Amino acid sequence: MRQSSIYETEPMGDLKGAFLNGVIEVETELPAEVLMRRMLALERIMGRKRVKGRKQTRGKYRPRIIDLDLLFFNKETIDTRVLKVPHPRLHERRFVLAPMSELAPALIHPKLNASISEMLAGLKSPFRVTLARADLLRPQPPPKREASSR
Image (cartoon, rainbow, N blue to C red):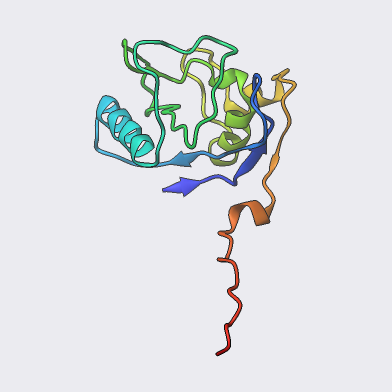
């Protein structure tokens, strides 16, 4: 497994606060659909609640504790009702392309025939993406308790 740095991203839509984004690369023997189901199970375990039966429309984003996406799966193109690979909007998102460029800058998008680096360089997104501050990534120590005297 390889992982990118973590990036701090301005929110899209009407959301407030920064988001943290990163990319990991894993090797698996699982089929893409099974891997995606396991990723969705991890989201549920971490507290994500998805609205069933209603697909979010573009521009209507909601706060969420975690959002896992399957960006690429080998060099496959998958287009089913439940899974689209490569992710259909990754080429529009600096918060995906910036960390992805750390791991696979020369990876070619099979539909767009452009590398991750080329897509990132050509992106016109107005959203700021910067390396996350280390203090955002470290677990905070529990508050100190005052000693009581008797």
